[in-house]
Image 1 (cartoon, one colour):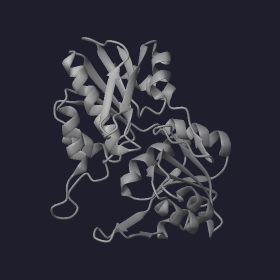
Image 2: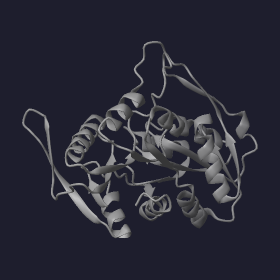
Image 3: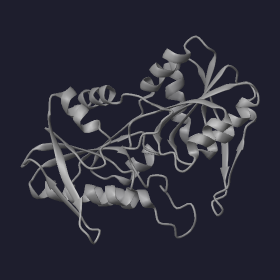
Length: 298
């Protein structure tokens, strides 16, 4: 097996290759003056198993096209692609919430699997059950590194009373996993969204008994509005708040919004190439390498 890093790889590929004792193959990519993309491998991979590493942010459309071009190339050279997507874009539209909506997750997965992918690994996909539902004939693994977050939080806040908080039911499994690793309880906040306006409101009564340290866990921080609202409520009650989120997109002034709401620290994973000052990025490579070996993928 060889490890192939696409342009969106946030630095995971070289680390995995080194840890697993595999050859790392970079990709040469450029953009033509008219905006079209060009991509070429720097080494041959004929009839080999290839671990393809790509993050699909930013920009989502470019990263998707790079992935499709690479898969077509590997298919042509009779290679076997194993796809590791550290951030899966277009995953939040996983069903038809309103009539006549496009289901973006299904479209992306169909495009990828049509190019011959038979093994897909994601890091904390928004809804792993929906991903699996849209896959046919593909071995799928989603990893949520709860132990990686727990180790960092315990190192900083060990010995304190703490509660893990899921900002909605979709984050419930993440909260349970992290709470088990931390040895504490967890709470799931009820969220209500107006599908036409996009306006969100929360029922925060379930947080009345939270004391000490609150650890808000979610897959994505985009604008930060949801987490900031919960953190502000907790801060007003004297509860200290930290955040554990796998994908720190932090669009616009999201980080500033979190700080103003009372969030003391944001822990994240290096799943996208962007890095923000003030965010604590945890080492994901050892955990990923272990998961790939344990599951017989690498």
